[in-house]
Length: 48
Image 1: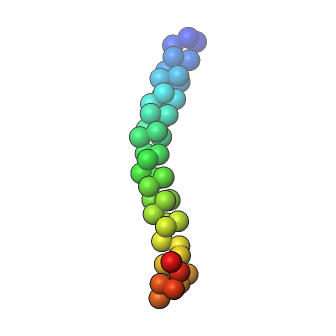
Image 2: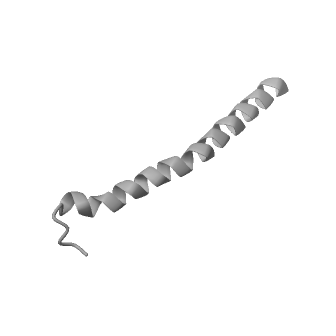
C-alpha cells in the first residue's frame, strides 16, 4: 500500500516538474500572442 502511494507521489512530482519546465514556454507564447493582437486588429499600424 505504501509503495503504491510512494509511486503515485513520485509520478505527481515528475509531472509537476515537467509542468513548471513547460510553463515558461507557454507564458512566452501567450505573451507573444497578446503582443501581436494589436497588429492583427490594425495591420496598418495606426495604433501607437
